[in-house]
Amino acid sequence: MPLGSYPVVDVDVHIHELDSDLAAYFEMPWRRVLEDGGLTREGARNVKGERFLDYPGYSPLSAIDPILGELPGEPHRITSTEILRSDLDQRGVDAAVIYTGRLLRAATSHDHNYVTMLGRAFNRYLAERWVDPSRGIYGAIMAVNQSPDDAAGEIEAYAKRDGFVAVYLPTAGNYPLWGDRSYDPIFHAAQEADLPVVLQGAFTIHTVFPYELHHLPTALAKQTLSQAFGALANLVNMVTTGVLTRFPRLKIVFQDDGIGWLPLALGRLDHFYEFLREEVPFLESPPSEYVRRQVYLTTHPLDGTGDPAFLAACLEAVGLDHLLYGSDWPHFDATAPREILELPIGDEAKRGILGGNARELFRLGKLVG
Image 1 (tube, rainbow, N blue to C red):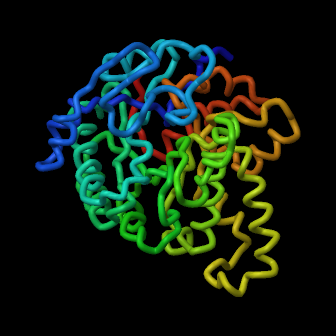
Image 2 (tube, rainbow, N blue to C red; image 1 turned 90 degrees about the vertical axis):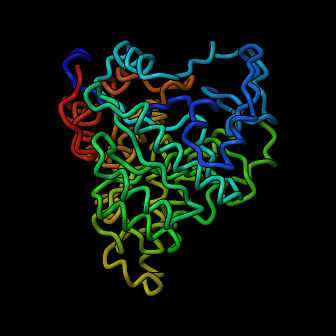
């Protein structure tokens, strides 16, 4: 069937917020950080004056791992709803859930006051400048891990606003991992609001487990491990500390991590559960049962497609009704909707991955087509 026969929801699209965009939404004195920072561009390879990301749209994003060869193309930055809607139309996407492009590493900040104000500013900016269900543009409430109580307040403030359909949890250098009980106010607020939490992966080199990748000599090695290691560590931590049992109605999405890491996680969890179940009495069933009930994954990057047997194992581990189309647009290796049509699964499963599963999970309204 042609792509146009499938309603498409892309749950992983990144906008590009400039310093000048966010400055107006900041409280003083933190607003001066952006007002005084300025923004200058010196060609495709240099973007100066941007606080959080060195190079939007590209990986690696680290100054110690510059791209040595030719760039994959000119950076494409989504700086307005007009650009976003045009992109979606060209790609055959009816609706999108948008996330930050430059604040993906917010979890690494040690300035708790600043990052708390940053989260508040971003949510206001998203609400006033971006979220528009009538155009198929939905948002996720940013919940900074450094200030769980404040993050819970942000969830309560925006959960009932039309167009906010999820909670964004920065998952790149976060310490402690998301299973720590200090985050319970965030999960409680999300569960009460009936909003899924999205653990957004990102390439990161940091001083906390499992992002201590500075000793690896190549960007290829770091990029291969960063997101998958982060997802593996956070999922195992959340399962074994009881997040899924304390919040049985909570839905959790691991985004931008691929799907190939999940069979490993579930296999080892279930194996050792048989021998160590006394230390996790809150788990009354094998861990994989809780994961398959409450956890969702997105398709980017769609690893495993070169090996049919491995791909089948990955899809079985996730569950076709818990797999969401997420492209990571506009980053250079974004997954195209047509890649889902090439999967060796039935038509209804493809329809669910491309849009049906997301419409149910995020409770989306009528799609824009």
